[in-house]
Length: 400
Image (cartoon, rainbow, N blue to C red):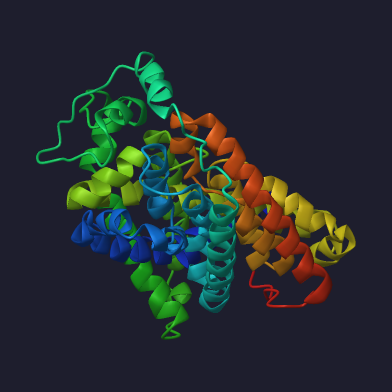
């Protein structure tokens, strides 16, 4: 039991202090830029149709799921091409992007560069071949049919503007912008500043430790832990509670929350606190699984991945087919620990859609299915190319 608790403690501290605090700061910076930019990007996309796959790949490449989520309804209402949807989904790495940037920023830049190039190429190819050109014919009838199944809610955010048509609002905004009376909603929407305080203070301690080599771990804390470990355990515990309060377990971003974050600083802080705690919990799960397996199995996980051969690439692609960011965060974390080869990671990056597929599934399931099918093909091809031709390309060092 003591060994179990020690592994759990190590996983929690590493997740909160080494990943979560950096993710929080990056989300804060991106959130501020998002609020400042408003709807300028979407307006630019609408005006330049020939450049849409480029815009799509750029929006997908933005860390997190927000950029990719915003693109999906634009296809159903006829604003963008299907190739743009494909370019966006291939380029996006979802919230696992925050994880790789926090630990291996050089790798992150290369990964995003590859995903952008593949997304852009496949996007233009899809449009040139006419794939999906008539996919949303009759879309008005499908959307209106969905409206009859969903009760549209009024928007209570002052000055709020939806980015889609009134028909799509009813489908994409089922229960949002309402001020529920339940306790959990009040906690997450009134005490978010306390969570930000934990993350920002933790970032200071982490920065002092990692960048300035100040031995914060030497200061005594509570429960027989160092101060650094104590703070990490408290932060990870609060993150777990916050994720439960927010009711986010597999996915953490929705279309409506993206709109809220782009139009209100307060909503940006609330939802980005929820997003960060979501990442912390999933990274903790991945770290614990890795540390426990390494400690108790007696198996060299790097050798195990090598023995899996090309199946590691296929497995990563299959994980990428799972909508949502949680499983993708786990795989990215295992790559950082040296347990997954780069070929598998890049295959997962190209295959996964993060949370972006959910709004497309809500509006037009046939489009979502075809988009998933199309993005899977380059994911397998590129992953196998890296596996056979560049087997040692940018494989991560074991950072544990």
